[in-house]
Amino acid sequence: MSSQVYAVERLTLTATPTRHAKRRMAQRGLPEYAVEAAIAWGQEWHQSGGYSVHFLGRRAVAGALRQGVDLRSMLGVTVVLSGCGRVVTTYRTPNAPVGQRL
Image (cartoon, rainbow, N blue to C red; front, side, top):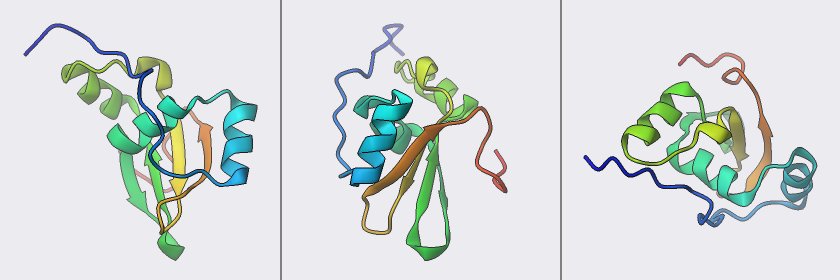
């Protein structure tokens, strides 16, 4: 394994955000690369209505770091995707979404 750690600032958002999600990202200071990192490396839960939640918790951050990707500054980023893959909203939280176990 390489000891080189890669930053994710060059990631671009592949999921299309809703107008609400764009507004929340701006209000909460979450760049597109943090949202994309949560989708790519975060733990995923499926919710009713076809929604999925992606949470970038300690385990996901540690796993990415072992692969050479530094996500420590994005710890707690949570993204809600619709059934068709659009970003509905995003926020940062210190804990996993309610009812989810890590």
